[in-house]
Length: 71
Image (tube, rainbow, N blue to C red; front, side, top):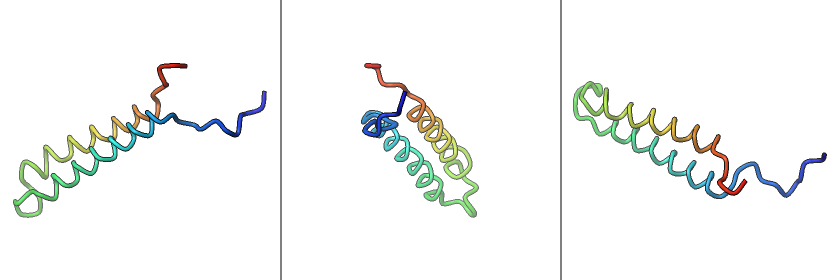
């Protein structure tokens, strides 16, 4: 069986979810940079920002591994 050259590895929904995940990751980094404490040792820099960033990476992995509903 030869692979179809017209077949893309992901569907449009996968790309859409990957862009959303990238936005979540960027939001986490922006939240970390908004911390006003010295060297980022406040709540945003040490807790909220990293949790949002890790959630974005988990969402990215899910978006990559997600199978389309119609297959």
